[in-house]
Every structure is written in C-alpha cells, then in structure tokens.
Image 1: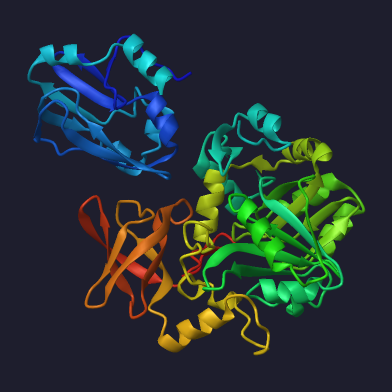
Image 2: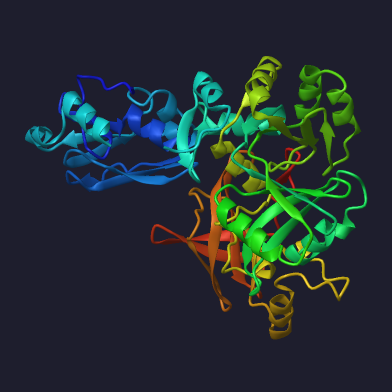
Length: 128
Length: 360
C-alpha cells in the first residue's frame, strides 16, 4: 500500500496539498506516481498565473500515459519546481518531498474543506 | 481469472507489478521500466514471454502448407534452425498475425502472438485442408527472452554444457534444440540475445539461475519501449487485419518470387500494388518536450494526414519516438497534434536504436 501522509489533504484526481502560512504546495500522490510508472515530463503552470480550484494546472507524462494535474485551491502561482524539468523522476522517488510541483498563494483557505482527508483518499483508492 | 505462466510466483518474489495482458497476468515492471530498459541496452535483462503461443507444424506437406499460409517463403530457410519473420495474411491481404517460423529439418516451429492465439489456430486449421500436416500447440513450453550485450555470455555461464555449446554455435536468427530445450538467437529488443523455450517444470529454476547470474528481470513495459526503439511492429497497434503489410513497413517480409507461389493474400497485394499503395510506415522523432502516443493525428503540409500507430518516450534517446502510417508522399517533416497543440516532428526511417546506438 502506498504512503498517504495524514497531515496532507488530497483530491480524488490524486494530487496532494500542504498549506503553510497561507501558501499551498501541490504534488501528486505516491499512489499516482506508482500507477503512472516512470515520469518523463512534468509541465507546471507559469508563475503569476491565477488559477481557480479545480483548474487544470499542468500535465505529468510517464512512459505509459499523460495525466492532467489540477489545483486543489484558488490563487496565484508563486513558485514552481524547476528541478523537475531535468529530473522528472524525482516525483517517482520522493512524491511528497522534492517531487512537489507548484506553490499557490491561497486565496481562500475554506476551500480546503472540499478536499479529502488522508482516510477519505485511502478509502477512494481502495475502491478503484 | 487470468492465465498465469509457470513464472508467476517468481515475478511476485521479484517485486513485479502485475497487469492483465491478453488474458494473462504478466509483469509490467519490477520497479522502474526505464532502468529495466537501460539494463537491456547496456547489460542483460530477461523477460517472461511464456504467454506467446508455440505451434509445431509437422507432416510431409509442412513446407507446402506454410508456403501457402505465410507471405514470406519458408523455402528460404536452408540452414537447420534458421528463422524467418512473416505475416500470416487473410485473402484481402490484411495481417491476421505476425510470427517467427523456425526450420526444424522436415518440420517447422512457429511462435505467434498470445492475444491472437485462438483466431490463429482456427485459421491455421481451416487452411490445412488438403495438406498432409499436423498442427500441434505446445503449451508445455515456457519461454524466457534473455536480451542485451551480455545476454549470451551470462546465459552460457549458468546453463552448463552441452547447452552453452549449442548457444555459442548459433548464428543470428537461428534456433536449435538442446536436450529438451529449444534455444534461439532471436528477440524483440534490437539487442543480441536469446529466446529460450523450457519445459514448464524447469523454468522457475532456470529463471532463478539467471537471476543469480546477474540477469535483471524486465517487464512488458520495457519490452515495449525496446521494441519500438528497434522499429519492430506490435500486432494490434502497428498493423492488424484491416491494414496491408505494404502500409505497415512489412514489404520486406513478402516473398514475391517465385511468382507461382500462391500464398494467401497474394492476389490482393498484387492488386494493391497495381492500384498504387497510398500509405507507408515511417518513424517520427519529437526532440522537444512531450510524448508521442498511438492514435495521435499526423499532418503533412500539402500532402495529407496520417496516424501514429505506436509512440513512446525513448529512454535511450531521451525524447519521444513513434511509428506512424502516413501518406506515401510524406518527406522529412510533419506535425503531430498533442492535446490540441501542433508539434513539429522529424520523419525518419526506423529503426531508431540498434545495439545500444542511435541509427537514424
């Protein structure tokens, strides 16, 4: 069973989000990277873009398939993980750490209520 | 429940991620598909290919039968054990399957795809009417493909004599019996290596010996990127019963001479040639970001449109490659639509990689 840290929140589309000091860091879950296999490209949003919760924020491509990434919260993109351009495999090896994808200045923390807890996400992937 | 090969438990022990493939539970990878790919290009990897269907054709008319059944001509096989790649066509010239046939001296051994097993056997049976042949499936054989520049040396080191002696004697594209095994210097990766048929009861032990001898287990994921880099077709993706071998890069596998050899599909193919073949198979290379995938549309300026038949990221080259069926007049560039955006691609002649090196 893939790791699902309890302190994070999740989307059913397999993104995780961590909010600290009003900034949300977003990546894809261990389960997602495992299902996709070796990642070969990560396309992140541009810094300065304003996104609404649920918007498409980028794309991850593995040898096998391409998959859209969605943002769990609304706000302005303030930082992206440049290192993934040359080392997309970091998402495979450290999905919740060095494999983070982008950071958003959170417009409304109440939106996190719409995301899944670790238990809820776990229940969802067990149903898949 | 899906079929399981005699190596099912070995796969689980090696940490395989299993998927259903043509009705079989098969390993897709054992951790990292790209690492497995690179191991085959640089060292030696092994694949369980026991799901492939082995069929023996025996009897006094076996040569005449296969000369009718197959688009390539088994009479070319003069040397004992020599192998031939061929399409098996329907009367309209569509590809029922692609296969390897070995000359067993007086009879022949065929290896056909797993997903096409039932229709292949039914077709072979129907077409055998009037020929004095016996067609025998060999489900008692498991098969391991050991591939890579060190594959032969590492295999010889674990099989012992006299099998190692047989292996060393093999020329490329030749297979010979060794005790109750059948060892062929063939493969689906673009590297040197072996495909070894072993009775089910012995195969787990042999797999373990190879593992201890430094041969890495590799899954179907790596098998697909390796064959695509090698420019080899995958049945069901790059061609099927609706596709002419002349449009699928298989022209070289059709033996037109002698002119009086009436193989199934010949009339249809001759008609296609007379009418003019509209499409051809090419390789595509995308050197910028993005991954080419099957079914993406290919546009060729002032010429027309085609389609990618299989595409992937090439671990050896570090960018994406594809096989595509495009209009005959396509020159050296085209555009591919990926998620609504057009990308420029180079049009090249496959293969992309042979023996670890770029070759286009």
